[in-house]
Image (spheres, rainbow, N blue to C red):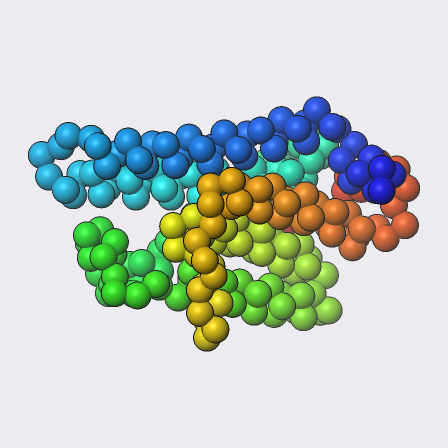
Amino acid sequence: MSSIFETCFPSPILTLFLCLMIVTVCLTGDGMLKKADLVSSNGKYSVSMLKAFVDSSTHALVGFLVWAMVENACLLVKYNKWLNCMVAAILAGIVDLDHFMAAGSFKLERALHLERRPPFHNTSLVLLGTLICLLLSKWRSEMWVFALMFFSSWLSHHLRDANHRGLWFAPFGHTPLFSTQLYIFSILVLSVCVRIIAVFQRSPTASSPSSSENFVKVV
């Protein structure tokens, strides 16, 4: 077990730093959302806009950091890998565009007050999309990397939302709400697991850190 972690996480300090950053971003974002409810303003719209910005930014930052965990030590020597993290952040953030799709309007108030959860928040869709990308990787090898990026970015978004609405597995229903501790822990586990899967999927016989540092080739 120790050899697996040494192979997948050649920089323990960086790994610990990224874990702490994920926890910090989640707690800070949640705290800002709670304070936004208490902000005195001239109208509800300004508060809603502030909350939407904070929430979407937090989702994007978490997606960025989760993929930074996947890139791991590559970030220290290959600066283009930061672009992959940016792609992951965009993927994590665009999930909320379905609010406007479901509302049929670009008005924020309508998008935030839907009668039901919009389609991109269906976790079954994440699993289906990941499966499709993996199947496509038989013809386009780079699709397996995108499958992991899509999975980690969208699922991190869903796990954070599970704090107040649970996970939605259509057509089966919703899970109970996740506590703050549970959703943050789940995101940390997600980032670690995706890193391990990525390393050994690309190099099943990896035995040294150097053999695991070149697997992610999106950019």
